[in-house]
Image (cartoon, rainbow, N blue to C red):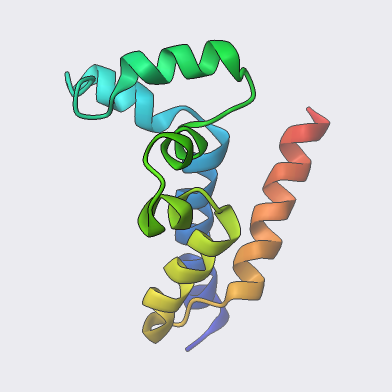
Length: 110
């Protein structure tokens, strides 16, 4: 598999992890599609008032503590499993984390 294929799958994994942990994509799309009750956005709004730096995965970890919520509330864990699942396509975990850290560094400098 060539470097462009590896880069494509690493970029997809980085995009998923970035969207989940550094944006409000879950809450915004849940509101947009009328899924506020399913995603418990009323309690999440109260959680955000108490914890302004909290995100939706950490809210899930605090309110519904189980293996799955602990897994998705850990960015490194989720990134690893995304790469492991897509591993047969050639996703390189080191490339993924390097891209993720570069994106975070670029955003912090702005």
